[in-house]
Image: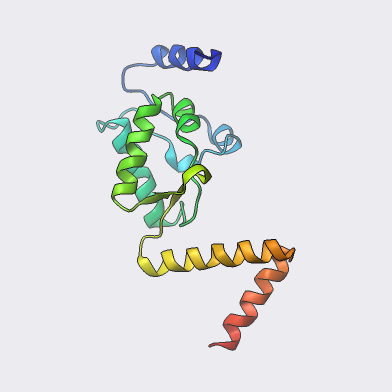
Length: 153
Protein backbone atom coordinates (compact mmCIF):
# COMPACT_ATOMS: atom_id res chain seq x y z
CA UNK A 1 0.00 0.00 0.00
CA UNK A 2 1.43 3.42 -0.86
CA UNK A 3 1.61 6.34 1.54
CA UNK A 4 -1.06 8.35 -0.26
CA UNK A 5 -3.63 5.58 0.15
CA UNK A 6 -3.17 5.69 3.92
CA UNK A 7 -3.48 9.46 3.98
CA UNK A 8 -6.65 9.33 1.91
CA UNK A 9 -8.20 6.72 4.17
CA UNK A 10 -7.21 8.76 7.22
CA UNK A 11 -8.68 11.92 5.75
CA UNK A 12 -11.91 10.10 4.91
CA UNK A 13 -12.13 8.74 8.45
CA UNK A 14 -11.96 12.30 9.81
CA UNK A 15 -15.05 13.36 7.85
CA UNK A 16 -18.57 12.70 9.08
CA UNK A 17 -20.21 9.67 7.44
CA UNK A 18 -21.28 10.51 3.91
CA UNK A 19 -19.19 13.69 3.70
CA UNK A 20 -17.63 13.43 0.28
CA UNK A 21 -16.55 16.62 -1.44
CA UNK A 22 -14.04 17.77 -3.98
CA UNK A 23 -11.29 20.10 -2.87
CA UNK A 24 -11.37 23.86 -3.29
CA UNK A 25 -11.88 25.04 -6.86
CA UNK A 26 -8.26 25.99 -7.57
CA UNK A 27 -6.91 22.76 -6.10
CA UNK A 28 -9.39 20.73 -8.13
CA UNK A 29 -8.50 22.53 -11.34
CA UNK A 30 -4.76 22.21 -10.61
CA UNK A 31 -5.25 18.45 -10.20
CA UNK A 32 -7.10 18.27 -13.53
CA UNK A 33 -10.39 17.56 -11.77
CA UNK A 34 -13.36 19.44 -13.24
CA UNK A 35 -15.04 21.38 -10.41
CA UNK A 36 -18.42 20.13 -11.69
CA UNK A 37 -17.53 16.73 -10.23
CA UNK A 38 -17.63 17.98 -6.62
CA UNK A 39 -19.97 15.88 -4.50
CA UNK A 40 -22.46 17.13 -1.92
CA UNK A 41 -22.17 15.54 1.54
CA UNK A 42 -25.78 16.53 2.28
CA UNK A 43 -27.09 14.69 -0.79
CA UNK A 44 -28.81 11.44 0.27
CA UNK A 45 -27.75 9.70 -2.96
CA UNK A 46 -24.66 7.47 -2.84
CA UNK A 47 -21.42 9.02 -4.15
CA UNK A 48 -21.33 6.93 -7.33
CA UNK A 49 -24.85 8.10 -8.20
CA UNK A 50 -23.95 11.73 -7.48
CA UNK A 51 -20.90 11.42 -9.71
CA UNK A 52 -23.03 10.00 -12.54
CA UNK A 53 -25.52 12.83 -12.18
CA UNK A 54 -22.76 15.49 -12.15
CA UNK A 55 -21.32 14.15 -15.42
CA UNK A 56 -24.73 13.89 -17.10
CA UNK A 57 -25.74 17.37 -15.91
CA UNK A 58 -22.42 18.86 -17.09
CA UNK A 59 -22.89 17.20 -20.45
CA UNK A 60 -26.41 18.57 -20.73
CA UNK A 61 -25.62 22.16 -19.64
CA UNK A 62 -22.33 22.36 -21.53
CA UNK A 63 -20.01 22.68 -18.53
CA UNK A 64 -18.56 19.26 -19.47
CA UNK A 65 -18.65 19.44 -23.27
CA UNK A 66 -18.39 16.42 -25.51
CA UNK A 67 -14.82 15.23 -25.76
CA UNK A 68 -13.85 16.37 -22.25
CA UNK A 69 -11.39 13.86 -20.81
CA UNK A 70 -12.44 12.70 -17.37
CA UNK A 71 -9.82 12.14 -14.68
CA UNK A 72 -8.48 8.61 -14.31
CA UNK A 73 -10.45 6.51 -11.81
CA UNK A 74 -7.73 6.37 -9.16
CA UNK A 75 -6.92 10.09 -9.31
CA UNK A 76 -10.58 11.11 -9.04
CA UNK A 77 -11.19 8.60 -6.25
CA UNK A 78 -8.22 9.94 -4.29
CA UNK A 79 -9.29 13.54 -4.86
CA UNK A 80 -12.86 12.86 -3.69
CA UNK A 81 -11.82 10.57 -0.83
CA UNK A 82 -13.66 7.62 -2.37
CA UNK A 83 -12.71 4.03 -3.07
CA UNK A 84 -11.53 3.50 -6.64
CA UNK A 85 -14.31 0.91 -7.08
CA UNK A 86 -16.91 3.62 -6.37
CA UNK A 87 -15.62 5.85 -9.17
CA UNK A 88 -15.18 2.83 -11.47
CA UNK A 89 -18.82 1.86 -10.86
CA UNK A 90 -19.98 5.37 -11.81
CA UNK A 91 -17.83 5.29 -14.98
CA UNK A 92 -19.15 1.82 -15.93
CA UNK A 93 -22.75 2.92 -15.49
CA UNK A 94 -22.12 6.15 -17.40
CA UNK A 95 -20.60 4.19 -20.26
CA UNK A 96 -23.52 1.74 -20.31
CA UNK A 97 -25.92 4.70 -20.45
CA UNK A 98 -23.97 6.35 -23.28
CA UNK A 99 -22.85 9.32 -21.19
CA UNK A 100 -19.14 8.63 -21.59
CA UNK A 101 -16.91 6.45 -23.71
CA UNK A 102 -13.71 4.75 -22.66
CA UNK A 103 -10.90 4.70 -25.18
CA UNK A 104 -8.56 2.18 -23.62
CA UNK A 105 -5.43 3.69 -22.13
CA UNK A 106 -6.33 7.12 -23.52
CA UNK A 107 -9.02 7.44 -20.86
CA UNK A 108 -12.71 8.17 -20.49
CA UNK A 109 -14.37 11.01 -22.35
CA UNK A 110 -17.73 12.76 -22.16
CA UNK A 111 -19.95 11.78 -25.09
CA UNK A 112 -22.15 14.23 -26.93
CA UNK A 113 -25.74 14.52 -25.77
CA UNK A 114 -26.94 13.75 -29.29
CA UNK A 115 -25.63 11.69 -32.18
CA UNK A 116 -24.99 14.66 -34.49
CA UNK A 117 -22.70 16.37 -32.02
CA UNK A 118 -20.99 13.07 -31.26
CA UNK A 119 -20.19 12.59 -34.95
CA UNK A 120 -18.94 16.18 -35.20
CA UNK A 121 -16.64 15.68 -32.20
CA UNK A 122 -15.18 12.55 -33.76
CA UNK A 123 -14.65 14.34 -37.10
CA UNK A 124 -12.94 17.22 -35.30
CA UNK A 125 -10.68 14.80 -33.43
CA UNK A 126 -9.68 13.08 -36.70
CA UNK A 127 -8.97 16.45 -38.32
CA UNK A 128 -6.93 17.60 -35.30
CA UNK A 129 -4.85 14.42 -35.43
CA UNK A 130 -4.20 14.87 -39.15
CA UNK A 131 -3.14 18.52 -38.93
CA UNK A 132 -0.96 17.78 -35.91
CA UNK A 133 0.77 15.01 -37.90
CA UNK A 134 1.31 17.53 -40.71
CA UNK A 135 2.88 19.97 -38.26
CA UNK A 136 0.27 22.67 -38.92
CA UNK A 137 -0.13 25.23 -36.09
CA UNK A 138 -3.48 25.01 -34.27
CA UNK A 139 -4.43 28.58 -35.16
CA UNK A 140 -3.95 27.93 -38.86
CA UNK A 141 -5.94 24.69 -38.64
CA UNK A 142 -8.86 26.59 -37.09
CA UNK A 143 -8.63 29.26 -39.82
CA UNK A 144 -8.83 26.55 -42.48
CA UNK A 145 -11.93 25.02 -40.88
CA UNK A 146 -13.62 28.43 -40.63
CA UNK A 147 -12.85 29.13 -44.30
CA UNK A 148 -14.19 25.72 -45.35
CA UNK A 149 -17.41 26.30 -43.40
CA UNK A 150 -17.85 29.67 -45.12
CA UNK A 151 -17.36 28.11 -48.56
CA UNK A 152 -20.01 25.43 -48.07
CA UNK A 153 -22.77 27.63 -46.66
